[in-house]
Image (cartoon, rainbow, N blue to C red; front, side, top):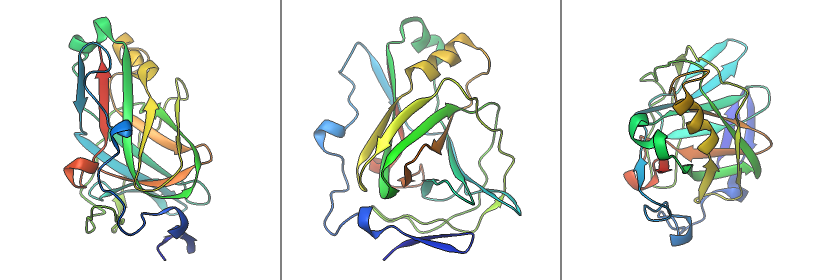
Length: 215
């Protein structure tokens, strides 16, 4: 049984994890496509990390294979930054979708996505062995997290491990296009009831986060 051990508490996650023989590729219906509307571009992150807030400080897992969302005594927030050509996509932006591939789900339910409020840099801490459907957090380092803007917000729901989840982040990307109140600094995710582990940019290519923008 795999567990999450944070602040001295083990959180069992086997019920919603990847079962033996689970597919490591998304089903066709879940797979991001490039033909749904107009022209679209799919990109993977230029940097990502997981921020953990503990009484002793704020910590960075920038080299981990995992992006973890967790609430409770030691809240955990992923930061994900994608390359976006705003001059190309903004004039005719029609839809933007954030895709994350779960490893395991501790609590099914909603997870919110916001805009990071300022520039940040993922560190080289937290490295751990990567597997197709098995991720872990290594030892972290201090992290200067910028925080997130309260609005706009996009909400997605996680229901099972080893599956793609999506967020309609069109309004968030439109905020980048408007250049107010911030520039393009990526997304921050936080629990609105759901708690899960997702594959990061250090995971195998087929499992990495994706941002699909149609314009």
